[in-house]
Amino acid sequence: MGQMNKKRDRLEVIFDVLKIIRDKQNSIKPTPLLRYSNLSSSSFSDYYNELVAKEFIKEITDKKGKKYITLTDKGFEYLEKYKLILGFIDEFEL
Amino acid sequence: MEFPHFFDPFLLGTELLFTTIAVVFCFLIYFRTRESYELTKYEGIKYFRDAFLFFGLSYVLRFLLSLAFLSRIAFDFIIPRSMFVTLFILPLGYFSTIGIFYLIFSSIWKRFKGKNLLILGHTIAILLSIISFLTRSHLILLLFQSVLLLFGIVSNSIMRKSEKKVSQIRILYLLVSLLWLINLWIIDRPRPLSFEIDIISELVSLAVFVILYYKISKWVR
Image 1 (tube, chains in turn cyan, green):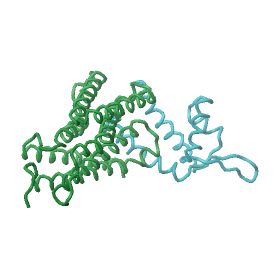
Image 2 (image 1 turned 180 degrees about the vertical axis):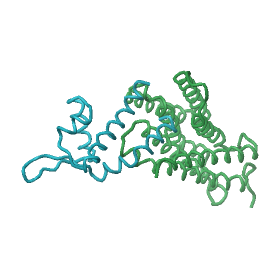
Image 3 (image 1 turned 90 degrees about the vertical axis):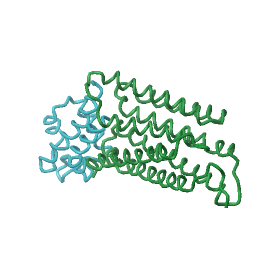
Image 4 (image 1 turned 45 degrees about the horizontal axis):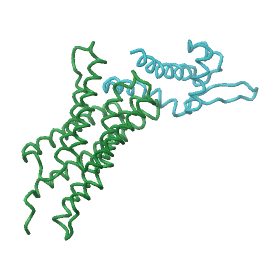
C-alpha cells in the first residue's frame, strides 16, 4: 500500500508541478516553482531534473539572463492525459 | 484426399482464425498502452503491456504450429512431430511463462523490488522452457505454468485479503491465463478435448480479449 501511494504520489507530484507552470501562463522562475510545489529542495531538484530529462519542461533564458521554465508539448500532453492514465491504473489494478 | 484421423478442416480453420484474432488483440493492447507508459514510466503499466506482448508472441507460435500441422495435409511434405516440438516448445515455453509472470507482476510489483522479481521470472521461464525442451513435452510446461498460476492466485489473494469482493479485472486476468493453459493443453494431436469444448474455450477467450480491449479503450485515447 505504501509503495503504491508513493508511486501514485510521484505521478501526482509531476502533475502538480506541470499544472503550476501551466497556470502561470506557462512561464515561471525556478524559485517560485519550488515554493508553490510544496516540495523539499532536494526532492524538487530530483523531480525537476526528471522533468527536464523526460522533456516535459524546458528552461529558457530571456535577454536579461533570467531563467524561466515552460512546458513542452509533451508536458501539456501529460496534463491532458493524467486523469485517464490514473483511471487506467486504477481499473486494471496496476 | 484422405485426411489423417485427427484432422478436421473446420476445427483447424477455427483454430487459425482464433489464434489470429488473439494475436491481433494482444498486440493492440500492447501498442495502445504505449503512450501511457511512455508518459509515466509506471512499472505496473510496463508489466501489463509486456504480459500481452509475450502472450501475443505465444499465440503467434501457436498459429505457426497450427500451420505446421496444416502442412501435413496441404502440401506434399510431412514435418515429424518431434521436430514440431523441437522447433516450438523452447520459445513457446519461454514466452508464455514470462507472459503469465508479467501478468502476476503487474498486480504485485509494489510489494517487491522490481529487478529481483524480473530476474527470478526470467530465470524460471528459461528453466521451464529448457526442461520442456529436453523432455519434449508440452504437458510438463502445462504443469509448471498451472503451478505458477496457482501461485499468482494465492499471492494475490493474500495481498488483497482486506478486499471483500474479487474484482472483475482479476477474474479477467485469471481467465486470460487459464485459457492460455487450455490452449497449451490442446496444442498436440490428437486433441484431448471434444470439438464443442474447443470451440467454447476459443469463444470465451475471444470474449475475454474483447472485454479487456474495450476496457482499455475507455482510458487510452
